[in-house]
Length: 165
Image (cartoon, rainbow, N blue to C red; front, side):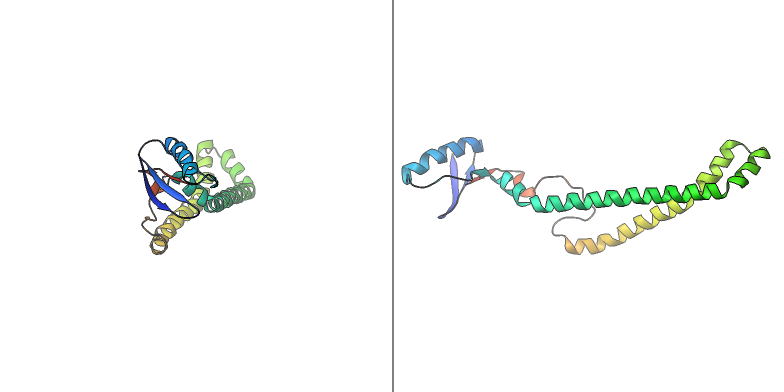
């Protein structure tokens, strides 16, 4: 059973009660009965149509995610460089401490502790900035919470599948 919503010179939209493939074959058989000169091209479901319309946004978000990952890698490399420089600068001090009988675990705690201090401050500042920016983001988003979880599918396509052709 098909329910036709709109038909104009270029498109027909129909709601499929069952499988969209069954409706597609039925419409392809019915159109030549009305006018045998009408070409039938671009038959697709609403889900595929919506996915295709978001292709540019998905590409842009993938590029943005790649740049974010690159920024994370550069930040980790920078942190590694700072820690290596700090340890190299304090090599004599670490050697003296070891010679005086300080345990290796205590030296490791000293080095890692001094490295974790700026890291913890950076993480706390980043979380605070992200929470503060959610207010700004909520003014840019429509019916989506800035702290919501991305589910990967368009809300309009969850309940029904339409055939557009």
